[in-house]
Length: 237
Image 1 (cartoon, rainbow, N blue to C red):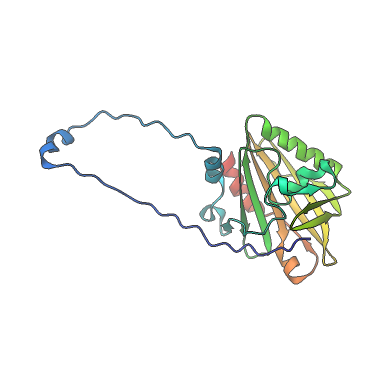
Image 2: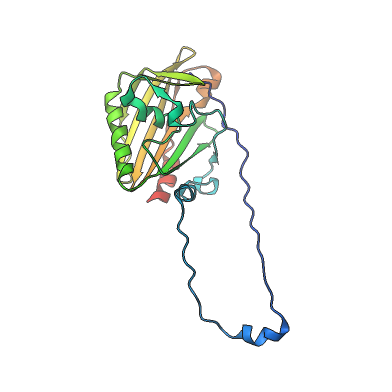
């Protein structure tokens, strides 16, 4: 099992620059006359801008720290960097390692925590028409056929999952799915969880682990925070 570092990332700072223009005295009269309003074309957001806009912020989260994950948090940085001994289980491996399922046009992951030891990785992905539904179908198929476990590897480490269980998913979006998986870390069983929701062409995946169990070397059982899911899902539909 790859080490599980604490997600400690400096907060991003946003700045705004305001500019103003003034006219000369000679055109005061003309500028004082009302001009016919002209509508400026609305900007079409790129897929990357869409997921950035949809991601829950700290101010919206209700007391969570919400940051970009630290470098090295994930087993792999991309699907291409990860191999799975059972190909059918690849969608599950992605969902449990901060990676998107399927082939999105853009994806973004942030990690949230609230001094409980639970780290929840939120991965938002947006897809071309129909591909989000296909991604959910592949994840559902994997969840139902990989109950006996599988092994995911990358150049930086590997994780052998002993079991996968499909759980009752909260309602939300067009469809939802929930899983629990177990593996051993230094001899202790760790239970991690995912909840995945599709809202049209957008998928939100929540992956939670009990970081205190890894740091203090004992068995751990992750619990996905319902309040965080509620807030994030509300931004999606």
